[in-house]
Length: 144
Image (cartoon, rainbow, N blue to C red; front, side):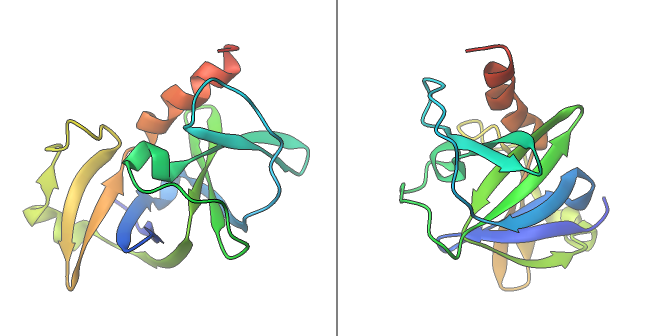
């Protein structure tokens, strides 16, 4: 595992491997998109490319709130798909591999997007699976 980008939503800390990250951008106005799912906030026009923005709060079962000007979008890429995760803010880049030895793997059947729960010093960091989010964006690309 290479470095991960660490980010927060409410008081919880999450991570995604850096190899799946394209960029981090400030939250911006979204183009409304009715996909029949609350999991998609809308589409982000990023340099002429339409990127679906995942409502990370919905996917993770967290309280829903409106986007704030201080929020950020993490632009992710997995296989040939791009999508953005809505986050409160990014914290740091960090190598989590030293902490993986004692990590709990895949015990979160109710949240298929979590790969590991990692005890990292003074906090638990949930490492997310990028492939769990592609099923949401695949539905958009196939028209439903």
